[in-house]
Length: 198
Image 1 (cartoon, rainbow, N blue to C red):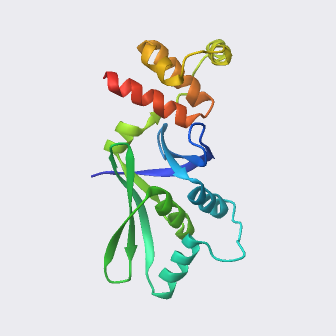
Image 2: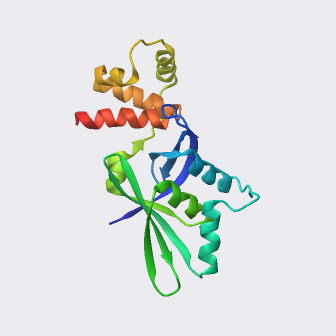
């Protein structure tokens, strides 16, 4: 199975789940995005390493790295390997100099560990096809302004109801608006509604 390299594009507070964050991964040579909802602790662990902040005491993922170095094994890569019932699964590929071992992990933990070892993050085409969101940066300014205006209009319906009652064309516009505003969690919900109809 062909591997597709991903890079970390952003980390932002979740709009719908208090205490959660949206980790946005992007296809290295493409315009697809893979948003993954993660917990606050894992988001903090990822952010600390990205910003190169050194905590007073080792955090759990730092401890994993120290443990690995002490026992002479390293991490080779992180693989976002599966998506089942809306839940992502990951694998940490390790090497001890003789053999390769694969450890199951949550994507948030795997990525927090992977960035500490400075290793690539991969996924496969089936996951990007199912859960990826295509970012388009070719919208006309006028259309963008209309999308912003429409998003600012008050609505008495819930977002879920809006999605169910929207036409396919309206859903596409909503998706483009969400992507333009980097609201990846919202975009993921719109994408899910579009997938249900296909």
